[in-house]
Length: 117
Length: 114
Image 1: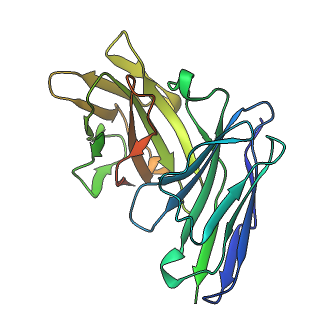
Image 2: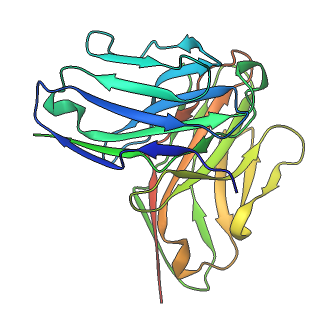
């Protein structure tokens, strides 16, 4: 069964350092999402891609976070510099179609747990 | 703005007993509703969804959910709980009219004991 891949699974860094997370969605899925899940809360959308284009990054802290999906396949989420409050689980998800077919469920990867010291 | 409420942080049930995990929502138009389950240190797994039609939706692992428009609820149910059902459950909603992002509730931890 096809799955969303993420790496690394765990990352420990010191504040002010740069970190990067990678996601490979299910083959053929046009839409890719990055979520942040703080302990005890539900996932919150950071950025949504339709192919290589950003369709929603309204909740992305653009002063320190960046995301790209250059060829419309895999994606990288970067934080620079990391802050203590960035400690969370970062989840990647994909779905076959974009906002026009918004009833499609999303398929989630295992996540990257970030700890900022 | 759309929102989801899961009023119970934790639900405890004995194995073999029926379980219910509650969810209420708020959208300006009609909702698409989803339930996901999360096991420790894992991503979310899709359980079931309501799009339109029959108010009773059946999903994976014997779970079902009932859409109630008048009460704006979408409670998750299972007739007979298993210890392996113990996990974190999230309800999520998307407004069909705006094609907006998926909004998740804060989650309910289900604990099934022998």
